[in-house]
Every structure is written in C-alpha cells, then in structure tokens.
Image (tube, rainbow, N blue to C red; front, side, top):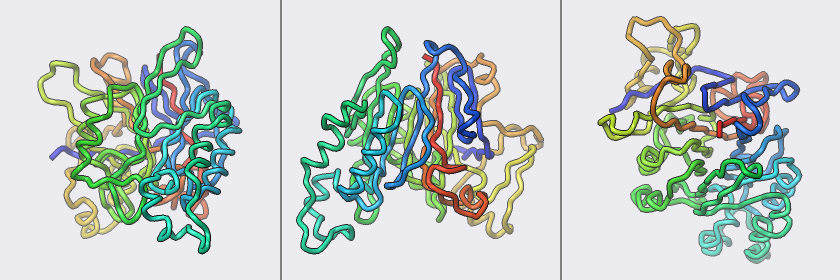
Amino acid sequence: MSPTRLLPYQKLISSPTAHVQLEYSLSSILPKPGTHSDWTRFVLLSDTHSRMCDVPDGDVLLHTGDLTQHGTLRELKATMDWLRTLPHKIKIVIAGNHDLVVHREFYEANWEDLYAHRDGAGPESAEEMRNLLKGPAARAAGIVYLENEEHRFRTREGGREWRVYGSPWSPEFDNWAFGYDPDQGRDLVAQFPQTDILLTHGPPHNLLDLTNTKIRAGCSALAARVAELQPRLHVFGHIHEARGAYLHQWPPTGAGDEPRIPWVQHGIQLGVQVDDGEEKWMDSAKEEEELTDGLEIDFGGSEDSDSKREMVDKDLERGTAPGQTTLFVNAANMPSGPNARRIPGGRGKMGGMGFQPIIVDLSS
C-alpha cells in the first residue's frame, strides 16, 4: 500500500512550470509568472449546480461537469447562458452525473421516474439540449462541449497547440447520469488518448476524492490510466469536500518502478491539523483510528522531522528535478466538508471563499 500524503491548507502552489491560485481577492489576482507568450492561464470550474459566481478572466475556461442541480433543460439553459457571458475566448465543458438531460440514453430510459420530471410533461428535447451545448450561440461564445472527445486549440497565433480530452463519466452510484460499473472502468479509460489536459467529472482513486463519510470515491482504473498518460493537467470535481490541488512529479523514464498515481488527501478531512511543522489530531484517539482505517499516512520527511510538509517536492521547486509533472485539481465550487465549515457562518456560497474558481498558469 502506498502512503497517503496529507496536504496542509494552502492558497498558492508554485513551481517552475505551474502556478496555482486556490484563494485570492478579485482585486489582487497575481499576474502570470512570465510573458503572455510563455504561459497560458486556465480558470477551472466544476460542480456549479445551476448557480453563478464571480469568475476571473483567463485564456481558457475549463468546466468539469455538474452544470445543473436537477438535470433539467431549463437549468442547463441558465448555466449555458451564464457561461456565454464570460470573457474567456475558449471555454471547454464536460457534463457530470447531475446533468441528466445531457445523458440521452440514461434520460430516455428514466425520464418518467426522475424527481425533476413534471407530471403531464413529456421528455425534454434532445435537440434543444444539443443546441445549448454545441449550437451556433455556444460556438460563437467559444464553448466546446466534449463527451469522450478530444479538442486541440491555440490561445494565440503561432503559440503552443494544447490537446484536451474530456469525459463526463464517473463510477455509478444511485440513479444518476454518466455512471459506470467500476468493474468496467478499465475499458472506458483505455480509450483516453495521450493528452496535455484531461478533464473527467470524477477523481482518480485516493487523490482528492475523500468524502465526508470517509469513503475514497475515486476510480482505480482512472488512477492507473492517468499514471500511464501523465498529462500536464488533470481536472475533475464531483467530490465537493475534497476540492484542492496537488502537483506531482513522476519518476524519469527508465527509473525502474512503474509509475503510480500518488495518494493525496487533505489533512483537515482526516481530522489532522497541519500547521507550523506539526501534525495534531483534532479528534480523540479512537476517532483517529477510525478516520485512518485502511490508510498509511505519510507526514513527509523522517519521523523526527519538524520541517513543514510541502505540496511540491524541494527539487521540483528549485527546478532541478527530472521527469514529467502532473497538476491534479479538484475544482469543485460547491462548498462542503471541513473546509466549508471554517468559512465564517460555516457554509459559504458556491464559488465563494474556499471554493473559488481555481486559477492555473502553465508554462508553454
């Protein structure tokens, strides 16, 4: 079993090739680290659930699903109307499990039983749904909807071509859209091509996927596939309470062991306070044992080390480490879990402090 690394609460992650702003004031957003030609700014959204929030400007907007709350055409229209108003010239979108009307096979088989269905009304139009996602108004606003598809783009003439692949699927639970049997996950993710940016609605297993009930809800097959693909950026959502980011360095080619995805969770979700070089359990010893059942915890460094645990390896920060890096981001905007409870009032709002759109700058 790999050790699970516990992340401290942080607002900023920085390396020679990636810069991440997780929390910020809209009036004092940091500029790109380099010249406009050297860096591309991505603004990440997920799990907006029919609500709107302030969204910083950038080169590219990425939304990884749950555009709606109840999965209706009316909700989808409201969200797409909002996205069209945003200034980003390129907006790449996938659906999520809440977006019932988008998953036509599921919707047409279940529409009469869905709680969002109004008695006396027929099924909502597939043509209207497709028009909202891929019609002339969407295209004019720079919106690209992906459903197990690849898209390539440049943010400026002569600039780098970025490859992005998007899939709305996640392991099934209850009666929701775009769900797959975990045993069939390997066949699904095997279709994912080599890409710079991977968008999935659900997370990989044991990486920013811990629920409020301490279930690690991510997909093991996805975790294995991401380790093979090693994209520059993997964005997902679905598990609101696990929102955050982690920059991982893969071993260099030929290093020996087959690369595996890191196991990473927030310390606060496991009842661990990670501050000033100390790890303190915030609950009783009994609760500690329950919370860490099945987890080997990596507190970073040696057992007697009092150095502060970092989210980025020291060699990576200095720019001396070989090998590819992947930035993993759970971009969920709907508040939930311990991070939401630390907000004044104990809840917060969609896209508000602690759950803002995440700003990612990647070097070209």
